Amino acid sequence: MWHDIGLALLRIIVVFAVALLFVAYLTYLERKVIGHMQVRMGPMRVGPHGLLQPIADGLKLFFKEDIVPYESYKLTFYFAPLLCLVCALILFAVVPIDRNFMITRLNIGLLYILSIASVGVMGIILAGWASGSKYSLLGGLRSAAQMFSYEIFLGFSLIGPLMIAGSLDLVKIVEAQKVPLIVYQPVAFVIYLIAALGEINRTPFDLPEAESELVAGFHTEYSGMKFAYFFLAEYANLLIVSAIATIVFLAGWKGPILPGWMWFLIKMFIFVYFFIWVRATFPRYRYDQFMRIGWKIMLPVVLANIVVTGIVMMLV
Amino acid sequence: MVAKVLMKDLLIGLRRTFYYFFTKPITVQYPKEKLQPFPRFRGFIRLVKDEEDKFKCIACMQCARVCPAQCISLKGEGKGKERHPVEFNIDFSRCIFCGFCVEVCPVNALEFTSFYEGAQYDLDWLKFDIDKLTQDYKKWERTFKK
Image (cartoon, rainbow over all chains, first blue to last red):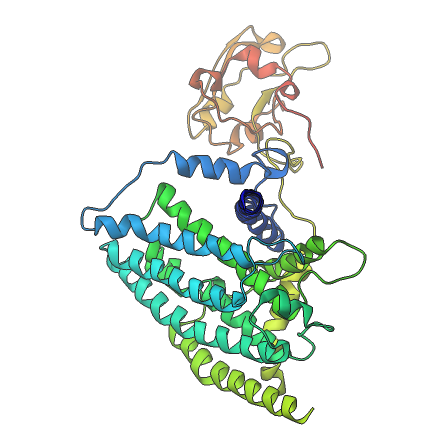
């Protein structure tokens, strides 16, 4: 028994250390990639090619004064960023990096990820409400509408692949894929990517924190370490979304020659790169456009996708 | 309709940014590398000496008179061909680099250098006297790249 606990602890430490490192350096990657896409260089001064920039940023946020607005609801104000971060980080628990390397294997892994992710949304809404500021409140309300509706498309876009894979267990989903599911489910894949962008508040759909409209949206009043929690949660969610896309659509760790975990990371970082790429390219959608895309285009398409998948599966 | 379904416009945008991702950044890493200013760049002003290490300046005071910021003050000595400056001050904290003094000088005794890094902690550093004005400015310029 102790042996099992020790092994589990070791796995948790390894996965979380690596995950937090990735999350920290994702900020660096993002700044670099966007910089080069804008024919700039991005961070260059702290360390060689700015490699120590995330650490410097982290230290700065850590030692910053912790400001709590007078009008805020104190307990909720403290609790919201933690909820956000914890919900983002515990998602890593079920992600299979290799056939045998994951913290725990749940037979409802995908459902677990979707449900915990929707609890994480509460953190943003709470933050917006507890700040006692109109910008935060508007950001929170927007994120409520946005994330709850885009969760639906995110979930529905995964149903098609799930019907083919026949399981919610992430390991079984990967093992069921002789050919990556993107070949059978291109429509679901595209819808998943769009819905994921909406779900993690990234740029074409970053309405909850729209700088030009809402200052910074739900984290207007946050600074220092509490802001860092939101920041980390956002990037952790980015990693998770990329990981799910890898597992469900690109056959996870499967691939020739290289070891499994390496394939997993390569595929995951293709998605991460794509999300950064999209951020460097598109401006923000208007709020009504955003909702129209969701409810009038994506929902019918994704439902049709499920129906067609079902019919084809019945016939074949 | 087909173009809209395939999100053609969005893909064109993505291709554009992807193209620029592989172009070379145009950033100049300023303190490390610097651009060579253009030949007629108006940098700090220098007092020129001729081959025999004598001042070309004849202390005619035209530069001091034409200077709109009134930052030049000088004193001359001697008569006729022997006339030369003994004091020559340019206050670069007031100089506006208009180039009137260089233009007005009848003997081309003033010239522009390409030195432009005049941001200093010490204001007195910018008050150039006759020795400082005749120095070779190259010694403050770090090596130029590009």
